[in-house]
Image (cartoon, rainbow, N blue to C red):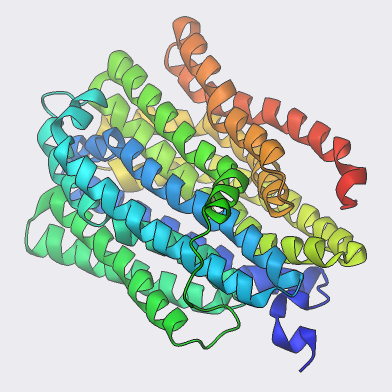
Length: 446
């Protein structure tokens, strides 16, 4: 059996085949975004906009869970894919198993700690008296499903590393459909309100988690479960290498908190509802960047590990062209379709609709720059340069945006809130270009 037959990552990719390989990850992330945003649509239209605001209030806790899972997944994927590229398959399997087990244990610990300190967490996140009961119902349920959330994040990345991106896509679609169906059942038919939305999301987490576990237990791919060596250095390396993704999610948690506090002060609960629409729309629209980066990162890691410089250059060049093209598309879609998106969420609340529509006219410019930043961060992670990746993620999701968010609303009020993200992405892009040029000779990707 040739290496190409044995491992799909060893294929000599051209631009079209690379996009085809990454396509399942892109669609998978798009469906993840859709079934995440479906919750907010159901809640906004069939509960009320205060319930919508409460989802964003507790969002930092969800960011933390996803951040931990993504850190282990992306950092661990780079470690595993590189060892597979070096031919150390048995060691790769052991590392893979250890990473998955660690993710499940961390999820259970989050459930226990979160429920014990539930009320303190909600008040600390800035909930008002009006929003507190909504927040409590939603967060309690999300915490119960924390381990499944961790597992599904891990498997989304590791299916690609195992050369099974299509399986990840199928499971993401199933999870998305299940979430939509259960949202309808729990929110509309059973009138369970925001708690029903959280249960529907939790069931969505369970589908890829359970089926993924069964798949890797059946040993139907080169990468599968085995008895792991309890090597703490593997977890430390995975966490260090995937630190940028954790930084990104933790930064999102803090900036979401700052957005909520600022908008609550300027416009009250309606302001928080409007920023919720923008943040969830941003997540949906950047899923193409994230999915493509996730899908191509193992290819980069494999070729870097195997020393195939020619294929590495070819891969990075094709990725860069695709990211530029898709960035222009997403920007135009957001700019021209912002009013329609606002109407989907806030048709029953004119004030929230107007605030959201005005926000899109400014916020949309962030999509011109964010794609290059997201891909470059993933590229450095794939090359095991966690520091460069973390620097990009930290500045675009926390450093610059926090400075702008604290400073601009003092002078520009709500307009300053909308400008914070585009300006942060633009400055980060300048750093990204510098880092790509600085490390060009070290990695030979150009």
